[in-house]
Image (cartoon, rainbow over all chains, first blue to last red; front, side):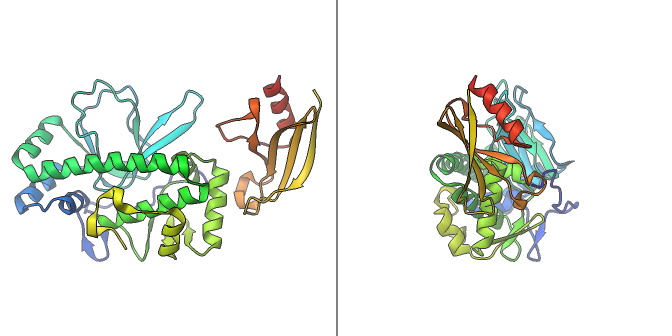
Length: 261
Length: 78
């Protein structure tokens, strides 16, 4: 079983590049929900400038901390998690490029969970005042951000279903489908695959499984010819079959026609 | 308490095929699986596939050998 930090995502001073075009993931994501004007896009560019480079496996905020800004990931992958006293960890969400969390953080006195980088990330902390100004000046942005909050909740419901009602193989297949669709909407899939910086331990803590069961599921998916996982690169070889195994319906992501068929 | 094990083949749909049924005073209390080379540096360890009653653990457990597994089982059943 291979454990250890995964930090193979490319980090440059430019927004992530894929399939030859420059994609600003935050704008791409919000523009997909509500068509944004050039002025609104400019405001988003401004608010997401000055992202800080953070190494892999670093807590961005811990349980009990006072939240001091909405977190926006512009590059890399982070996660939300909770720990039990015995050390058991449950990952409750992945934050991909363009994802924010706790936009309504202001009334919270303390965090009830933690957010940490999985790979190296570029992270922006948007203060409450900047966020208020952004949404007051640009109703389309406010509307798009409300959509992202609804999708976050819908995703959490889908993950509950995943853990409570799917087999080990189905859970892993479902997670791979979801990551593919979400990364594709921000232009971060290449040749039917993507960079997967999660370790098997991370996947286990996400899917409520042991690393042993994750390993067996990965072996089964490979044997079925559905995926190939080399290092940190996941390639989906048979998308219809992967979707069928997972019973994956991307409706909870509310992407409309942007969701891959 | 008398602990005995019975080797059986297990169908995990993976390379993990060797397992041990663990009995305490004739009741089945756990199933241990010998991890195959699929699991890298964990290969050869005994994984608690399932434990019943006090041996039910939500934290994944594996043991270096049968002695270690038996010591944990005795402690947990006490």
